[in-house]
Image (cartoon, rainbow, N blue to C red; front, side, top):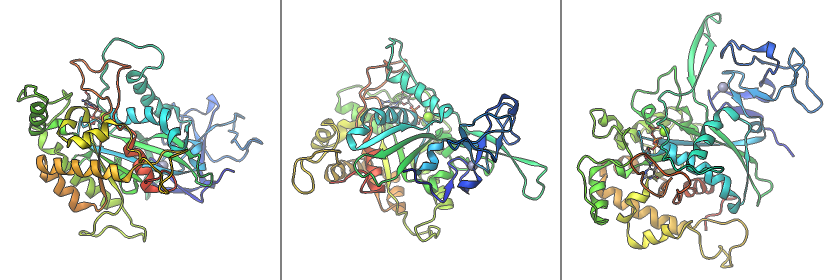
Length: 435
Ligand SMILES: Nc1nc2c(ncn2[C@@H]2O[C@H](COP(=O)(O)OP(=O)(O)OP(=O)(O)O)[C@@H](O)[C@H]2O)c(=O)[nH]1
Ligand SMILES: [Mg+2]
Ligand SMILES: [Zn+2]
């Protein structure tokens, strides 16, 4: 049976609203033009008439399919009303691999999430998801395999939808705000039928949006950080000469002093570089979290209090630097997903696959050791802010790019779904078992 909540939080403007206040998006051509959006967008309206199938009818008699937030007028998938939200925030400096990570992750979710006990649905939210689907088709082509190398474009800074909203004191005048639009997918646990549907909302920004001072009040793009259910901070070791030198030496390759892997867009090493240091981006993230975060008792986070929700440091592009880990740890990663050999009761594993708490901890501890050696400043900032941090290596591609990018259809991601499964397990132990 469909279960509705009493209140919803808009995934773009973060204001909360009741089911009965939701606006519908008109479908008749005569109703193009919404005062908050543009002359091309269909008008948003509060319906008075519905079809027997509970769809609103607009004033020109068309049956409508889509709904929108009463405050910002941005469309939300209808599936969102029948689900709980699971907000996934992806943070990281420029070119740390955020967009490749999301692309490879969603490709993995579609193909493999059922092995971990989930049904997976596309939320009907064509416009935004389409960008991601195009990127998936480029890297993991389904239809024709091109021999042309591809490289996904960098994410545009301050990217979102600009909305005009009436000023509070002078409602005939408008202010403009830019809000983000997440990618949205729905998942449901096969194993526990009483568990709710989840709308997975994934936010991917340009690294520039995380620089200090870039959270402009008129563009509250990263407000999701305070409510995030899965906070993935991407740390990319291939941006640092001391890391590069170490893994190249280990692989018996020559180190070119000006070499930065896969990173023509990388600003590290340029005059802008000081603001893209991961410890600064992490510090800025903590400031934004503190602005919007409330703990279970509805209180703000105190200055010396530690953030108690899980943070996952996704250490990206591990195809390049993994050789620096202990050999036993490399073997764990090479085996594929970190699965326990037996269930909690000592029996063979049947049904949905659990994750091994022990293996994840071994890998995480070794990465912590490595980062403490090569980037101590970063580890200090992380350890002082949060009490529950796990380091998980991933590679979205399984290999480094050749000169012009990656050859489509040849990519073999490493541990790409592990951070997501781990975050689900931390969110609700009934969703994914940690054994
Ligand atoms: N070796 C390796 N290189 C990768 C991997 N993922 C991404 N890259 C390289 O890193 C570059 C940057 O990746 P993006 O995903 O675009 O980085 P981003 O964090 O989204 O960057 P902005 O949107 O500009 O902030 C890409 O052009 C790739 O060449 C990976 O798993 N392994
Ligand atoms: Mg990007
Ligand atoms: Zn809204």
